[in-house]
Image (cartoon, rainbow, N blue to C red; front, side, top):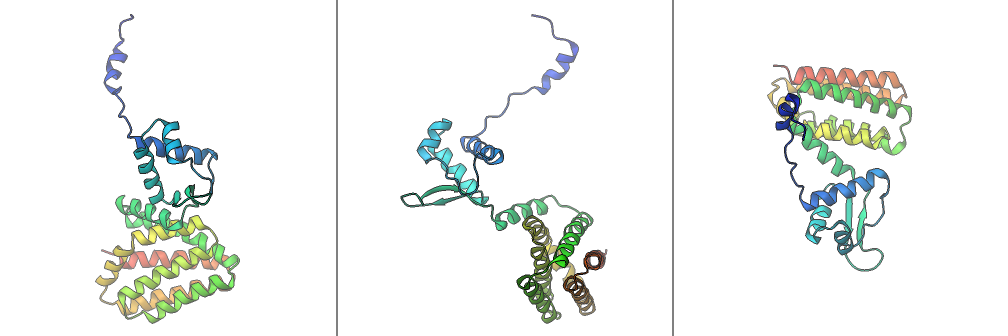
Length: 249
């Protein structure tokens, strides 16, 4: 055997034994790979538990745990009973599951307010522009309802924060992009409490809430007028000013 070179001796400590994955993690990886490759699509049924366990050479308990995890993520849905309607199926990823997943990661990553603000601007400029290009009656009604809720909540900090979130999410929904709406929702939910705490610290809240609501009306007017550029610019100006004022040291 050839002697080890100095390079081999130096790098040898980096090559450590790999950690064995638990059975359910291996099952999850296989299912995810099938979905990403297109072999499994929305509505497709997974093999029965016993068959899947046998094929993957894992325990049935490992399959059950993998299914439970993927169900909690909104990737799979299980239908109890007998017959063709029963079993475990690939689900269309619910927005709620995606939003919850993203919201927790945004919160745990401890992003700065500046980072969150810039991300919001990118997403919400695009949403406002898309909404201004074509706002249908139902979407317009939802944005208008959220705007009216803000008007009614000017004297209530908590209610205004809820209405503010509702207004911005209604515009994201009106954009027609489910992904943009989910990302916007995740970010808004992640900063919901910091925003509320910032609002509660503002002694001059009455003036600030009226100004914020005036800006909301300006955004809505630009969207309903079909003015794409004005809607985007008004949205960015609103987000930047609100962030600067509410989170000022």
